[in-house]
Amino acid sequence: MTELYEFGRSLREISKELGLAKTTILNTLKQAGVTLRPSNADYHRGPSKPPRSSVGNTPYGFARLRGKLVVDAKEIETLRQIINLWRSGKTFHAIAIQLNSQGIKPRKGKAWQYASIQSVIQHHKTDLNRIEEIITWASKN
Image 1: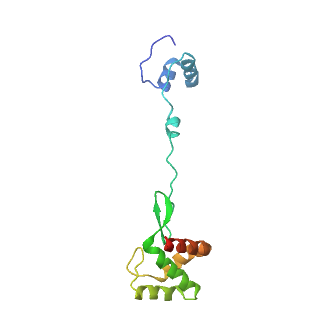
Image 2: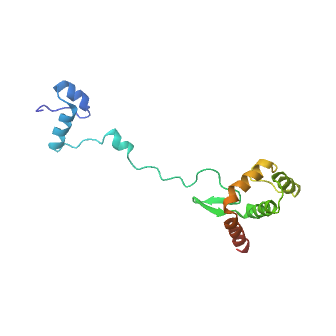
Image 3: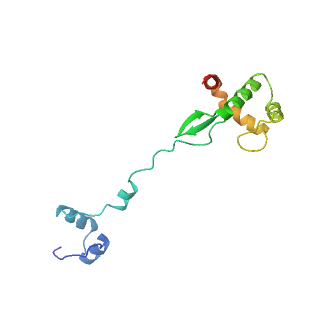
């Protein structure tokens, strides 16, 4: 490898011309102290994207602020009403009718539906006690 090779030539081209394996050429260049560009794999390993803070829909009654869930003042009282009506034994359909008759609008859409009430209840069902504490705290502050 006494000849001088043009800058920017690939190891494959040099390998074909010299009749040597690419790894042999690569190792020889490294031993000689030649600085090589990073491999394609190094480019792909570069700085990864930061983890997404928001996955899925934001639960009703909450909003996202800088990636964290915070209480949504516009929706929290409606959420409390939905939970209380459900705990009192009302059906999803009856809750939707009551909210619509009071003129309360959902986050998206024109009117409450059975499925939207069901979705809110099922999303919060496992954490109803914690949600009640959050609603109480938000009402006081």
